[in-house]
Amino acid sequence: MRLSKIFSSFLITSVALSLPTELAATTEITTRADSSLVGYLGVFFLGNAPDIYFYLSNGNNALSFKALNKGNAILNPSLGTGGVRDPSIIAGAGAEAGKKWYIIGTDLNIAKTTWDASQRKGSLKIYIWESTDMINWGTERLVQVENNNAGMVWAPDAIWDPAKGQYLVHWASRFYSASDSSHTGSSGANQIRYAYTSDFKTFSAPQTLINASPTAIIDLSILQLGANSFARFIKNESATNVYMERSDTGLFGTWTRPGGGTTFIHSGVEGPYAYADNVTPGKVVLLLDYYGSDGYRPFTSTNLNANAWRDADRSGFPKNLRHGSVIGITKDKYDALNARWGA
Image 1 (cartoon, helix red, strand yellow):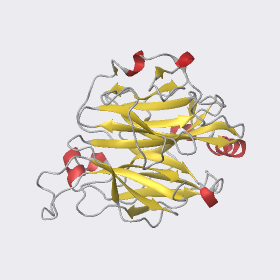
Image 2 (cartoon, rainbow, N blue to C red; image 1 turned 90 degrees about the vertical axis):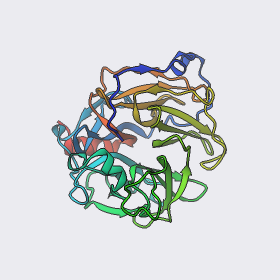
Image 3 (cartoon, rainbow, N blue to C red; image 1 turned 180 degrees about the vertical axis):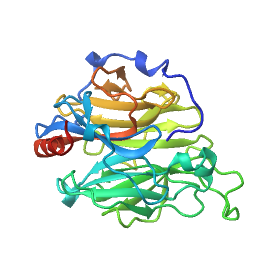
């Protein structure tokens, strides 16, 4: 989620990218070389165009995408603020595996407000679309997930919690005193909140997932690495960098930062999103949004124990894609998307 500060387009961390290359990688990541997955679907918004755009991979290349629908939006929100940012596509899990997909996003049209107002009295709801075929997405709905002391709900995303058997939905919020109903005073630092859902219609009461106060944090993305192992990527809003933590004891286990407590991946970026490679076992692609420049740029790693990321080939990756998401897809879905919205 972009704030008002603009930074230079390519500020490289002095730590993470100087680590060993993929030749030194381990094979500890069990995610994912899946022969049933033949490509990828990317879901993004584009700069000041707060709608949802689909991009389909060129074959099973995790770094090469083409715009669908001739580059026009696939989903145009009409409820709430009339603008959606930070869309995340979530594959159904549990009983919904292979049967349901969801797209959720931030209810924010920045052209109609200001960054300050959007954090004080912004929307407390998230956009939700759902589909049984990845083609027909029905009618959007807005669901409130946060209490009235919050100033906003930004960058919602979700992951299936195997321990709970439900989707854990998370987002960033900041909070004001209950006596400050107009939210004109000072707030606490942005923190990560969460709730559980089984259907993206009803949600449990929101709780705090990560509070790093006084550091403000936003844009959480979580990737499952193994049965009980996860990596999470977070934007430090105070320092404007993205860092990674991992847990091998579940979503509510012990999280540590590979490389130490001050290690980060890049500065001047936001909206991290990581997805597993369909072909190469243990390989992960990380997208970082250079919001002051040309949007998402891809990086790769096969060693998340070392937090070792390297610049990926950008020759087939579109420019100016903003904070979004990517999932692997099967041949029937790849062919259907290409037939419906391809060139």
